[in-house]
Amino acid sequence: MGLGRSLDGVRRVVKQIVVDEIPKGPDDKPGLIVYPVPTQGIQDEPTGYFPKRQTWLDPFESKQPPFWIGWLKKSPPSPDDLVRDTIAPGIGMRDAHNRLWEIPVARSSLAPTGLLPKWWRFGPNGQSVGVVKDEFQELWTRAGQIWDYYNYSNWRHRRDAGDDLNYDRPDDLPEDDEDDTPPPGAHESQAWLRSQAVYALGVNYRLDWAELNALHAAGLPVLDDQRVHAACQILIHAEFVDEYKKKEPPAPSPTPPAGSDSEPDESSPDTNSATENSQSTPS
Image 1 (cartoon, helix red, strand yellow):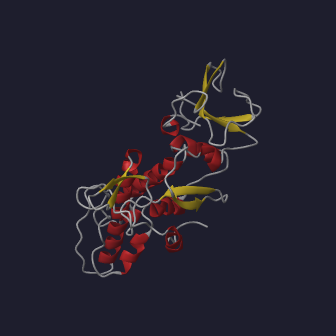
Image 2 (cartoon, helix red, strand yellow):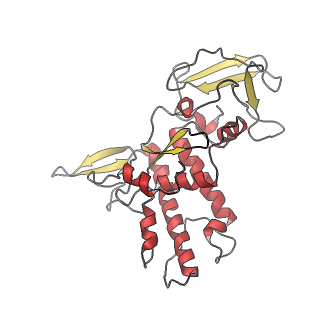
Image 3 (cartoon, rainbow, N blue to C red):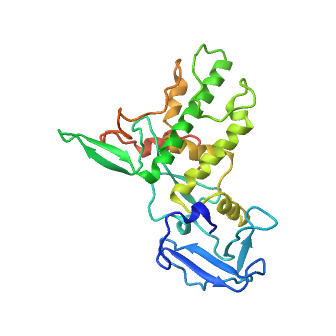
């Protein structure tokens, strides 16, 4: 499905990706059909352009689409069809059709790098420190920004309610139109949060904006306002909710020990407690 980020990591034709030339596509022009091989293998369906059996979509409704996305009418793509070969462990989020999407846990108050895959380094006495693998470094950085977003948003609400708190606004958060507008009501920050949710979904699945549009067109939308927040809160293990009860500035996003990119191995989040604490996760 689609191009760009959805094809990240595929290099070997046939084993990892299928590329077939076709004489005519949905725009009546010759082209290529390209798709990654699902982890469960290729289904027993011929590759090609068969409009009676398939639905094809210009995902951005442009006049000259650079690509189209297609799927079988009888079998729209499922999470299992789109899952990547290597995933980051996390917590499941269900869409409106009860389909389960696993969102990575990238940060937590219990473990600065959450459940992200790591390499291990060792000290002279055998103490171990995990270093987040390169392919998940951007996710770890984004999770830190999301952590700060929710903490800062909560502080502003509490400040407006009369709490006497001082808290410096993190520099890497999106700007709001007015400083006295709480982030949840600001257009730019909400658009930013939606982009983070899309990125989080794309870590474990071959998904980006185009594929999400295709799923919506197939009658299987994934993200609404509730699930945008659920995905982002799962990323940070939803532990920030404990900070809301305190009469002091919220804690900054957790960081590893000095000189390291992650935390000692004895800290690891309890995914069961996170599921219970994450009240925004749809059921």
